[in-house]
Image 1 (cartoon, rainbow over the protein chains, first blue to last red):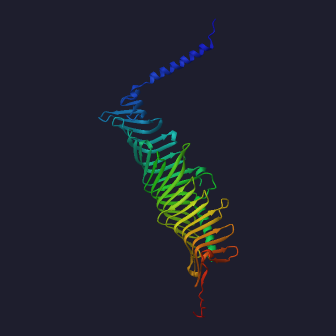
Image 2 (cartoon, rainbow over the protein chains, first blue to last red):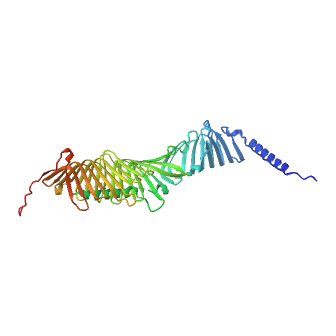
Image 3 (cartoon, helix red, strand yellow):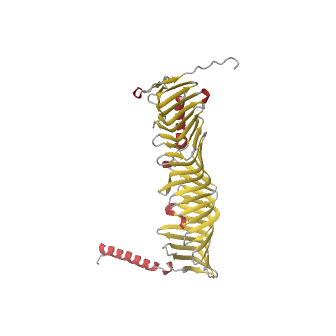
Length: 191
Length: 266
């Protein structure tokens, strides 16, 4: 009986690895990523679609991925959808911004949004977390605002206030009215 | 002669401000808080915070109040490291019983230099009061302090010192006064005691504990007036000398007026 040589086993493994990569890539080559209003449906009941995944990309190359427990589509010119327990991931040249919310209303061809019910924005790479109750804005410009209480944690800095304006997905943040910033100074700043 | 008191005051003044603004905390970490009434802006790309409207900044017992406060920082391992604090309009800096006021204040946390500048700034503590019309600078990294522009110092005994510029150097180890220089239109005045000294330059050196007044030195004591090129006061002995300038043929001049003895009942 001929024993399979080590080289053959190694070559087979490499082949399998390449094939799995090719197949995986092929399967994930989803045209809906650039689509305007296509989404995956896990299951569907009378009014709501359960288990939703929506992928979008704007002209600037920013990618959006919206995952939600349920989706309800309202027939209108604005293509309004209502999401429950949504998680939106915005990919701006590798910088990921995640927005989670209990409820979300997305209108104007996936551009305008109103997040509500425990809204949380996170930027893991920058140790950034923002929590509030509601958040209204547009994906296209990355501008958001709220009139509710806001808590921001960014590294060693905490900001509290009421009423917020964000531009370019967080490049500029303004707390309107009374605000408080706390910064834990490290040894370098202990003067 | 009030010069000794000046030195003591200058020492207390600058040393206390050095502690006041720049004192290192006992803990390795400390917390900075900023409260604002109008708005708090964060420019993430430009890396600074901007607080507006009755801003109150607190850190280790130091309170800074101003209409606007800007804080520059750099990002290191996801943590914000403060670099510079800039306060504008109605700036009031307090710690315990000391207070500094002005219209514009910067503090560079890297170089450890605090600068209060503008048309008018003050610093007051139990040991006295200082005002200037240009700036007051505290360089903790190089152990230096400076007040510039029509400097006025009022001591607790009501002696007033005027100069265009006052500089002080400190010992790095214990921050005691090493050298102090008052430059330009130096006037030392005690109205209550009818004493007044004038010079172009006043220099104190802790090594020999001697104060030298140079350039058009005039010492007025009640109705007596002495003038010369140099005045030397030895703080150890308390003896003051006034010296002429033989090279330039300038002699010591003195005007003495008898003081009438007060009659009983006057």
